[in-house]
Length: 195
Image (cartoon, rainbow, N blue to C red; front, side):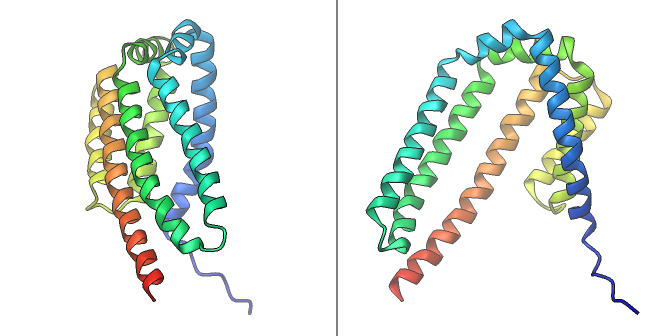
């Protein structure tokens, strides 16, 4: 009798199933925005914060390349040096992301999106929240945030303010969690360097 592979955890299966749904929802929302909010989308791309974000990405790429060249023979030390820069870089990116969300042009785009693509927007947000709920433990900040907004989005009409607040809070929580993980990795690398 052949042995069956061990069953996958339910959360992982649901998350993977939702991945395809997320992709389809992203495409549908983007197509709708491109058609119904073309002017607002073009205007939002001209934001000074979008330009700043692109500059941060270019600086990051250059720094990574320089770091790889400089530390070819000492990868651990190179990873430590780059890790310090990386932590500052992701904080700066998160700050710019929040500025983009708070900006007038972004709000105009969100308002147009809600006016012309409401169903697609709601579907995308519901999938995002479902993914958070299925891939995080109940005691995490991110899970609690998703639970809160699931109730809000199920009982109220979507508003730009609700969407923006959710996105900002989500980014702050994700950044905080990610920085903790990076600090732990940095401590492991430093310990490895000392041994």
